[in-house]
Image 1 (cartoon, rainbow, N blue to C red):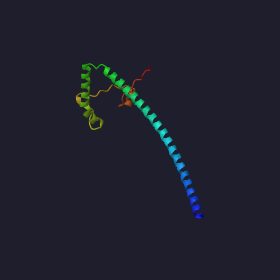
Image 2 (image 1 turned 45 degrees about the horizontal axis):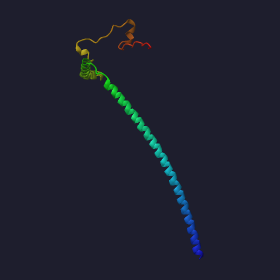
Image 3 (image 1 turned 180 degrees about the horizontal axis):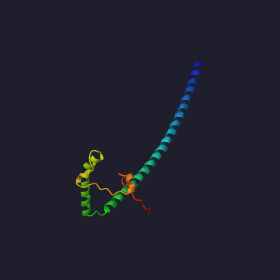
Image 4 (image 1 turned 120 degrees about the vertical axis):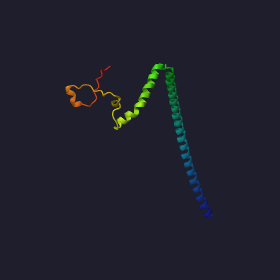
Length: 140
């Protein structure tokens, strides 16, 4: 009988150890569940804030689009001049590109007129080849 008593006490100890571990695990699970709840609430807040921010941005874009649509178009003559200007720019790109890469002459030199250079004053000989200095601006 003493063997059965010791077996029974051993089983009781194991049972108590199992119940203790179970309580510990239940506590950890509850703690994790609370953490997940907090995390979900935070994500919901962030999601709502992002939704609000996106909505505001869309409204701002819509206002800008409406303002742009409401603007009168430029006159046809102005549009034609602008189109001609950009066409001439595109036509002259290869010549300028060649010049800027150092592979050819200045594009305006070959057009039959000499490059324009202002007359130099006596004191400016040392700055030969430099562009003119910009004029000082006045404060507004």
